[in-house]
Amino acid sequence: MMDHSYMMIDYWSPWHWIVFVLFAAVVIYPIGRILARLGYSPFWSILAFVPIANLVGLWIVALGEWPRTRPNTR
Image (cartoon, rainbow, N blue to C red; front, top):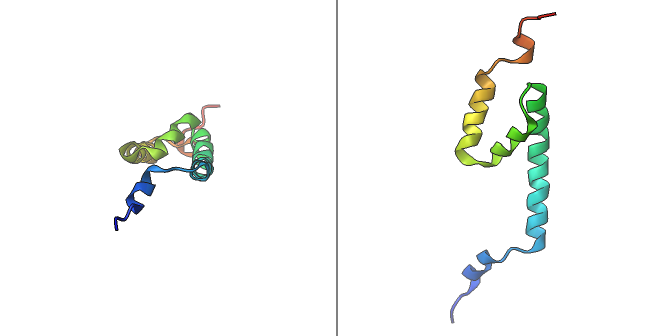
């Protein structure tokens, strides 16, 4: 008998998409809030799902100028 279990990979039920959207919201929302507090656009949080771009973005944030370390210009 042939085993056709490998064919199940092609099937994505609506529950898979619901879980993916919830996971994406759980990841993107806090990253967007952190980036907004740092003075970056919250839309950059989408890079968290791009494999190499997420590491580059992390280094940009880590090495960039932080709001608390800026000289007070008032």
